[in-house]
Length: 361
Ligand SMILES: O=C(O)CCC(=O)C(=O)O
Image 1 (cartoon, helix red, strand yellow):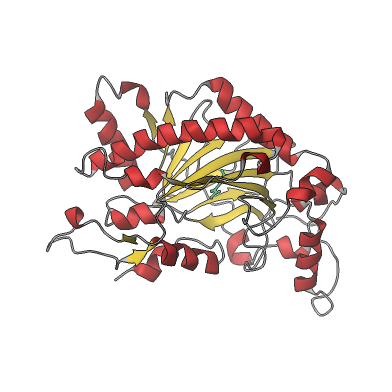
Image 2 (cartoon, protein in one colour):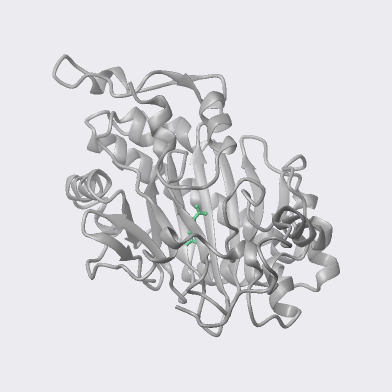
């Protein structure tokens, strides 16, 4: 535990947290701006409660599964089985040999880093909390709802069903974002096909789950007091499936039965996780998992790019698929529209796996 106190060193009686949060947001420069200003202690509103901090050092030595996609054409049933096993236990796995050129993996991370390292006046132009135009640069999507802020900034880009205007995507990462989206759609369709087959549903059943897509490009600057805050609070993703590209720095962890497990960076791999919606429609055959990112204590910033795959029709009714429910296995969730589901998600802070409980029967 750090012995330095977080800044500002004021008594609880005089500290106006809401004002401090507002002032931070008004800088439009995120956590990167704080680090660039030379701070050595973190503002108090980044300090997490004792119950979060005391859990940060707990970790298990196990690994999450790695699935090799190169065998799809020669031995599809084995790959389906490996994916089904990973999705129904941990809900998190890495995939290798997915066919995305290593050069694009590298370029996408580098372009996202370049966006976050642009001069302040360029970054601040894109800083906004509303996704109106489909692109927003923001620090902490839940800044005004959460008990404590987290040490990261994010560029969000809507990719589907209606993508942000090409010109809106910051030029410094425009080509890479658009190329990355194409590859994620391709790999996402393959994975959703395998996951669907794993439930005995045929390869096409989850096709629509790739149509609604949002990309988040996270930047986790060095944190001077990493034992007082987090990079990203524990949460489960609400949508169907997440495709994540992380750099070599590390810090992502997933909660398993054995405790928190590091999702160790594997060169060239993608990290895939099941979201709450897929847990629900599979009637819990597949499991979404809580995950978090530790505050970055390394000398270099950490960069990750996640694309959340969702259905596009917000009015469509979702719930456990009838093929997967029976007298022996009754539906565990009620039906809802995707709109109701996402509205519920955005009403709360990113605080663990609680979204599914709102819809549980
Ligand atoms: O940065 C990471 O590794 C994880 C990102 C993540 O969990 C999210 O965006 O929901």
